[in-house]
Amino acid sequence: MRAASTAWLLALGLALAGDVRAQDGVAPDVHAQEDATRLATGFTPDPVRLSGRTGGLVPLSERAPGCRGYVGSSPNHVLEIGAEIGFLRLFVTSREHVTFAVHGPDGGWSCSGRPLLGAPREEGRFGPGRYELWVGSALPGGQISYEVSITEFHSVTPATGRSIEGPAITSGADLGLEIGAEAGRFRDRNFPRGFLPDPRVDEGRAGGSIRAGVLGGGCRGRVEAQPNHVMSLREDFDYFRIEIDAPEGATGLVIRTPSGGYLCAAPDDGPVRIERDAWAAGRYRIWVASRARDETPDYRIIYSETRAPEE
Image 1 (cartoon, rainbow, N blue to C red):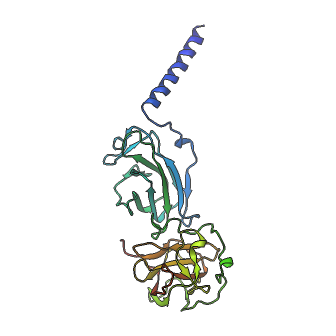
Image 2 (image 1 turned 60 degrees about the vertical axis):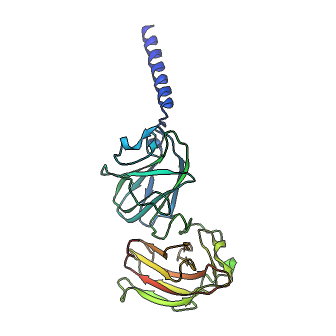
């Protein structure tokens, strides 16, 4: 009888503790039980997108001095990185103000990254290990929906949307694109690693009658059926960059990869650029789009193995 009473009291105590925890606004530690998102260089789809809701009464500054916002008792998401990734960008988009912090495998915290078009972000080299992502609300107990974007591309921003390789709405062939073209309308290139001079620069004219936006993935503007350029990489590249030099907001970039995916960039401001740390050997078809329906702006296309200066 005494043992039964003890068990009953223990159960009651645990239930009351749970009620107090809920009343305190501290979210149950559910994230710790979920599988982590595992990343390696060249991950697809890119960007990875993780969604959730903020919630909690715990000031993040209690865990990470200098960080702002209110969070629950466990991270919103966990990343597992197997080997160093040379460049990784994480940013959070939401209709309301949120805060963002990253707790690294060395025990350090990052929460002071300069916002990217208003979105909290952290970026740079990420070594192997476990990373906790904490998304907070500006006020205690705030329930705010958000999305975390994780990418290896400098060209991906909140403005470009889903502008990276991944499932396309169409293969492009049914739009009239010459996806198997052996040559482009303007100069083509064949690059080995370590090519010189670096960068290589060619010229062309953007535009056409086919709407690239039908491809999905953040592609924008109008292009011709034939690619502007066809680029061949003789071997895998650890890093490569393709950039368009044209009046701001006038052009977009669409690249069909050897695997049949699409890489796109069409920001309203800033460089039209696609760069990543892993490019497979093979043939890339490149279209340079005009953002205005009846315009065909001139441009310069830049190819480089050298990283662009930080903005």
